[in-house]
Image (cartoon, rainbow, N blue to C red; front, side, top):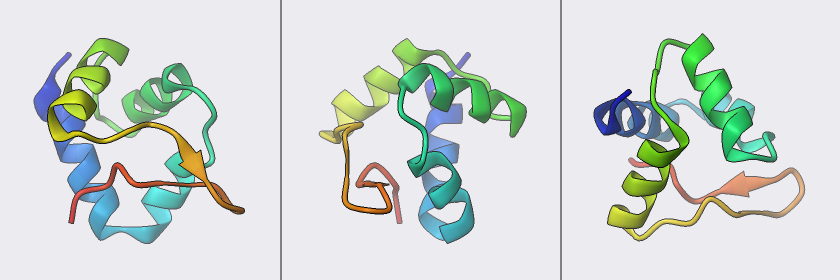
Length: 73
């Protein structure tokens, strides 16, 4: 488990609208982490929380379809 994997996923999502959309649909951090593992990004909810806190981002989604502002460009 690694914060580096969280960062790699946030960068990948920032570059790939389809990947970002797949994750934006998820409701919970647990679902987010489980899908990330399937996609090869292994990290814990705590790792995700740490990276989001350190970057000043929030996991909350908004809009329809839902979107998050956690993705890195």
